[in-house]
Image 1 (cartoon, rainbow, N blue to C red):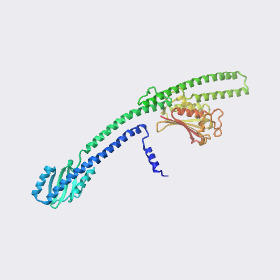
Image 2 (image 1 turned 90 degrees about the vertical axis):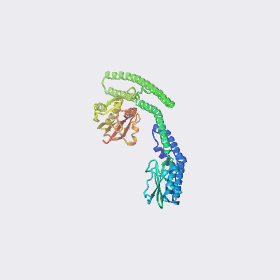
Image 3 (image 1 turned 30 degrees about the horizontal axis):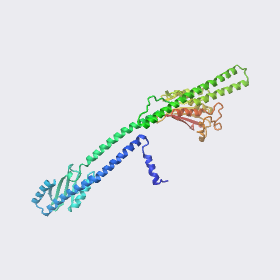
Image 4 (image 1 turned 180 degrees about the vertical axis):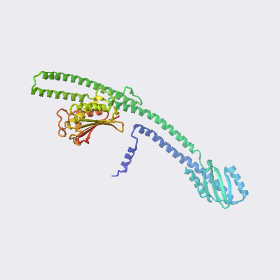
Length: 447
């Protein structure tokens, strides 16, 4: 389907405009300057250089036509010598008669043909005789030849007699001014954009949980206001996280105290089937509390560390093997990444235990991405999940029992915690079909 012209051009230009603030700000400054310089240059050539060159060429062609006609009226050697002397003194022209010669058959045009075309028009208007000229052979002179019955009249004229030779100086100064203005614009724009880039980097680092103590507002007034607002927001969020962590610690302590008393009482009670059922209910309740607190606590208080990825995966796999799961690990020994070890280990443990609960074989692998990030995959050979329900599986307390074998111990927070941890690192967790036939969980973390 073809787009209408009214819609095509805005979309065409939008696709080719710079995407960065640096590029767009530079374009806003440089493009008007460039357009202005082009307009000034065009006005100069149209109103000054071309007009002046046309007048000079017309005067030169008139002098050459006068000398040619004067010689043709009385073609004597004495007359020729007199004309040559007069042309040299009065017209600043060097005239030589080349008896029996013919005009050259080839012509070399100058790279900048506007002057040649102007001179050609002037000679055509003033001369009836055939002529030939060359503006490229001599740097400061023009070679003009006119065919007469006696031979060729060769005229050597200074270049400034035909062209306005100072035009290149104007263009040079115009170019220098453009370069200087562009350089100043680049320096100022770069300084302002750098402040915005630092603010963006600080916000991204804070989103990953990293500290940026050296960040301070600077730059333009509006940028400083945005940076100050970011610092205030960061303090409020950190204060909220600290209060939530303290609250969760208190709740955890208050809930675990009665649970511990109940476990102790059950341990001292006479063994029976009813006591065993109560112990299982108590263990399930304790596990559910741990899951809820882990989901609410997130990654508060843990900083980034440089770790060896294979060692972390082996620790996750070993923990899963102790529960009877068959887990295989594949990762390069030298692969390293900056992560929150405890948070990432918990996320991967949730994914591995989820895979082990629904399949008999689990593969845990990691590789470096071409972009510099890290990708960790967890594959199982279980029944899998329909693709249209992948996102539903990440919702807290979601249990897709009809798609997978029922996990009686879980509360539907494993995938939600894993995605929360990955997004806290600036990455994400996605689901797709595994080559083993079951489900694949893909954890991608940026550099």
